[in-house]
Image (cartoon, rainbow, N blue to C red; front, side, top):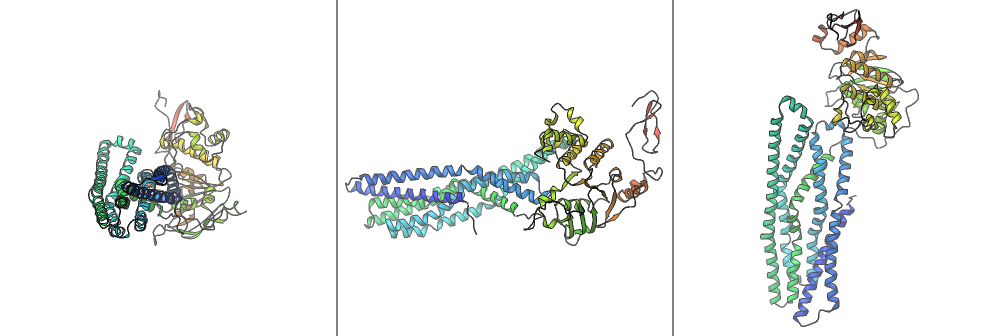
Length: 606
């Protein structure tokens, strides 16, 4: 069933009320002219009629302005809808679109579409339908012949409207496309400002932005030129010709005695109401074309299908099934492109309280497996269960509530440490926040900050080091307190000292939980109860945990040229460690090549 917004119905009704009140005023003026010409008094009823029609016209105009003032509510609702759809699409789909273009659609695009609906769409519907009502009343109350002749000319109005819209549709669409592209380029430049400075590419980026801005200016000027052309054609040609036709008809019918002087005047004045659609387009041409293009843009965005859609009967279980594994992949397969599977036959179980490490060469599907677990994708075949429940039958919110994820790239929101921690649990008090920081080995650092929990982290957390950002992510995972902890290369971009601190914090936070660690790093793998290797779309159990076993797992995941350059010591590879070893009151460090402890030169202290 077609649902029409109540505000649009109100806008159309106000347009009709205004037009009919004006027609009543014109007919009243014609009656007044006839009475004056015949020497009759106007009388109180006619005075009341004229005042009432003028008052209704003013009232309708004021109500229309008030209704248009609700544009902000329309904008808010549109942005909420875009945001919901953006979350439904997920990060995987949105990675193909530049963030600046989405921001442009959600800001400038929504504003233009809302202005189009508030000031153009409903009044335009009223204006297009009003001539039919006016002609019917003129035929009944004034002269059916003159109304008939005007009716023959009225169809030219929608034809003219369609012609103008078709002529300038491409201009408006190109304008919106360039506006979105400029927004995307500008956001890229702001986000990559440090990189631009280091590369010395700031001037080149500035020239690119200047060229894009100039292209946008030209499209705006073309759109404004079309607006002026529209006004010229409407006012100087079409409107003048139509009013001239109405005046000619009025004179002919007046001379033939079919119309009085007042009726002839009313006919000419009423003909201006028939031009209301063109007047409306002329006044709001820029708003109309920009709004139409923005509305198409928003509609196209909302039409993008999400990668994962909940089943109609999806439910949120009260908890996991007793005795069921926390996570179970049962012969799961997935392919981004048909016929090219990334995962073919993955079967694994992760029990509560167990630490399971998943490793394998880059590109074999480890990130895809995590995406299935997080609900960003659904298996193409096989069954994925969480707590014994098939994820195909549960809500995405429930599925994601069972997981706490520490990814290799931690995203921190601009704001304070407190703000970022409360993302995980908005109800947490300061005591819980400090306990979470302590569990993540970050409490001492935060205590030493001038503003403590209220210290700003900078945009995207740039005020923190990589290791500190990761430990803040661990604190958020601790606050969420989900039964399953997913570690997706959590130490991939930190130094060895930060790696040790992060792994120690993860041992604390992961205690008693089902932990799935996806990693190439041996230190992460060595903590696991079981190690699985992913390759060729399947998983295989690694050998029993030992120094040699961990070494063989590393060989599976390390390029050959790197393995050959790595020396062996007692069947294990010694990693470079920054831990100082006391030797004779001085300091020794593990040599990167031999694995032996070397003393520093005499007389020097590190």
